[in-house]
Length: 427
Image 1 (tube, rainbow, N blue to C red):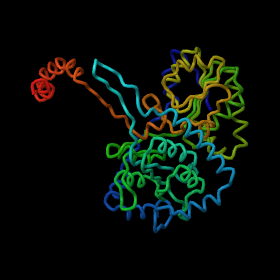
Image 2: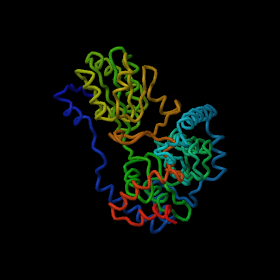
Image 3: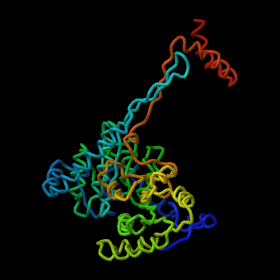
Image 4: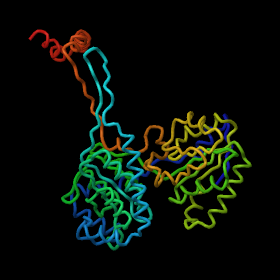
C-alpha cells in the first residue's frame, strides 16, 4: 500500500495513479460475442456444452429441484440460516420503506394534474457468480428487492461445481426470497440465456447481479435487448479518516474489501501522515493472520494512502474517484457527508464498518464501481420497476392549455397534434 501526497497541484496526478482502467479487453469481447451467438442459435444444447466446458459439470437438467433445496436446509448450519433470516428482515424493511409506489400529484395548471406511479418489471433475472464469489448475501440483496418491488417472476442463474451442485447457502437464501426457478448455468452463457430465452430458461426484461469480466461484458452486449442493473467491476473502499479514528479499525475495514479479489482496491484519505503510517502498520499486522492473505497482498499493490493538504482537496479527490463504498471516520463527519456527491454507499462514523452494509444494515450492497457512482445509484426496489407518468385533464384544464398547445403544434408543423385539441371545442 503506497503513500501519495495530494494537493491542489498534484490532485489530478494522484487520481490518475489510483484510478483503474475500465473494461477494455477486445479478446473478451470477441469470446463473449461468440458465446452469445451460440446460445441464441442452439439454446439449451449450447448451455449444456458450455457448462461441461467451463464448469466441468455434465448435467442432464438445469433446474434445481425441490429436493435439492430441502437438502440444502438440512446441510446448512442453523446459525447461517438464522443469520440469513435476520439479514433478509432488515433488507426488506429498508427497501419497503424507501419504495414510493405513487408520488404526489402536481397541479401544473388549473384542471391539469400530473403524477407518477411505480410498476414492477414482470420478469427479472438474477445472476450469482460461482466458486468463492457464490455469496448468499447477494441473493438476498437482489431477491428481497425484487419481491418488495412486486416482480411476478424472478429467476436465478448460478454456475454449478463439477459435481453439478450449487452452494447450500445460496439455495437457502433463494428459497427465503421465494425464488423457485433456480438454474445451474453460469458465465456469459447464463446472461445470453436470460436475455434471449431458451427452451428451459425464460427470457427476462432486466438482468441483475455481479460477475467476472465475461459476465459484465455479456451484460453490456445484451443491453438494449434487455435492461441491466449497472456495469460491475472489482470491489473498492475509500476511508476518509482523521487522527481521531482508531488505526486498527480503519485497517480492518480496508482489508475487508481487499479480500474479495486480487483486483480489489482500498484507499485511505487523511491529512495526517503519522496516522496513515499507523494504519499501514496495522494493515501489515492484520494481513499476516488472515485466511486470504495471499489475495490481499496482491490487492494491496493496487491500494494507496493519500495524504491531502486540505479538507477541500480530500473532498475533490473523493468526488472524482467516486468510490463504491465510502467510510467517513471524522470528528465532523456531517460536514463531509454534505460535501460528498459521488459514492455508492456511505458509512458514517467509527462504528459503521463497511461489512455491516455488506450483510445486515438493510441497505443494498449491489453498488456502482470503477467511478460509475458519478452516474449510477445503489440497487433498490425501484431498480426492479419503472415509473409511469399519468396525466388527468378536466374540461377547464384543456381550455387553459388550448392556445399553448395549438401555437406550438402549428410552429412545429404538426397539424394532427393541433387538431386533436381543437376538435374538442368544435365537435
